[in-house]
Amino acid sequence: MDTLLDQIHRYLRFPISQRFLYVSLHPFGAGMCLLDTPLRIYNIHRHEYCLFLKGVDGVWKKCVRCQEMAWKKSENGEFYGVCHGGVGEFVYPLTGPDRQALGFISVSGYAPADRAEYENRLSAEFALSEKQLQQAAARLLPMPTKEELDTLIHPLCRMLELYFIRQPLSEPKSFDQKVISYLHSHYKEDITSR
Image 1 (cartoon, rainbow, N blue to C red):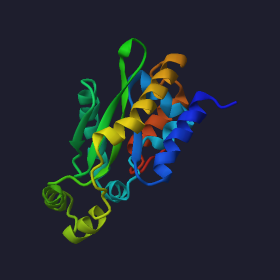
Image 2 (cartoon, one colour):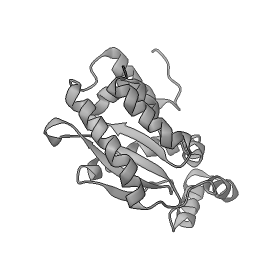
Image 3 (cartoon, rainbow, N blue to C red):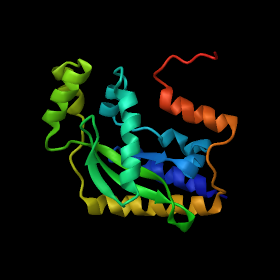
């Protein structure tokens, strides 16, 4: 018999495998319990442009800092925004019992209308070739309708909320959870055991 986590994982794989949605999960607080499950593989934007940018020194750190702003904004409900890298994303809040905020789902990889402005700023801030940025950004997707996304993402929100109801929620306390959380935030840095 499938567990709820297996069903969520299969549900996530379908739109991702069809390459029409780039879905990532961003838990915080007690929602960090998701990082102790197989769903942790969805804790990063996997669009080729995002992966290209995160390979540039300093960009990943800025992504992590900017996620905190998205977390705070998601507490007020769904929204569309453009990240510091110039990628359009739709954000759906995740809540648990008593409607407490536990993270958000991001559906990203979309080309905003003002993409060139972001490319110019990134080029100057991180010493990137504008040509490289334009080539990488050419892979960004056309904007879907909110109705299309809602049809696929609202059920995912409900499945994750059900998981949070069934799962005892807690901040990362185990050594393993703390290590996984740290590695997710610092994977581009040299890490030593000192």
